[in-house]
Length: 371
Image (cartoon, rainbow, N blue to C red; front, side, top):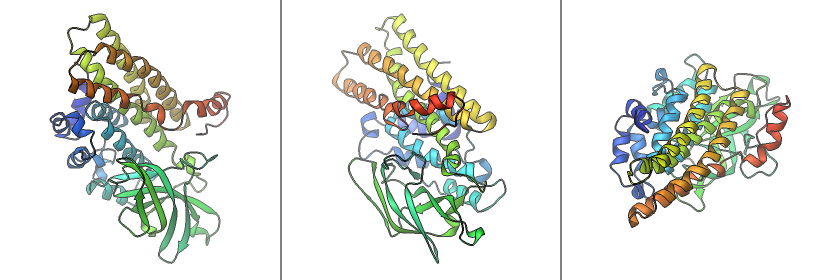
């Protein structure tokens, strides 16, 4: 099987026509401010990739989704990174849905059937707060809850249809007693939602008393669930798919080297071994998710693999760029852009330095916390 053939075959199966459309569009156009990538993703049914087939989705497994993200990253790294945030949101929602045809399942089906893009608001800018902690505040009103706060950066800020945020609200089943965590789905077009900042599609989203009705609130099924427990599954997916996306960008460089017969065989095979070894490690995490659903140990493994892949990319990317030296100006521009994109995995949370203590504590038989 040829390099990336399996990944692109998975895209063809689950999102027909997408890979062909991306391949037919110049890379720098796909990476530009007016990129057609998001619309091509919608047209292929991409927003429903992780939704179960009985909820109007494509029913992709974790292994399928990993391969899709690597394939997308090899065609347009920015689209792969942005859609990972949507998939993280969907994986979180799917993980919180009930097994019957309840309201939560209807929400997932609605997102998939309408090809809606869902962004997720983290706690990125709260010093001392865990990234999975609620980043918004909520107050109860007669018509639902009013949410205020901000999230920055927010991938898909200008393309999103819905913003998913975690908040604490009074337990209505307990006459407004102890607060419980919920995921609120905020429509991007309602009053109180604004987008502003710098950058193309990764900006600040501010909520100012944005009203969310009760039917757009998803509560964890376990009464004692904490926000970090609610989001463990989604965050394992995030690590997995973001790893695949950046590995895809690096794979685009490796693919160019493999096709260049001027490069010695030893160099080509060396890069191939590194890239495929990294992918095999990520596939191991995907299979763990598919076999039993992500738990704390799976999340830990997803972090181990993600940091291992970072190290692999730090070797593969500069070597591939060096071997591709002497190309014409357009090809050199594309190579430089791919190299910059492929080196971005270490910018995503949680940073390895911040996780050193938590992982050491986890290996000492303590709970895993996300810095």
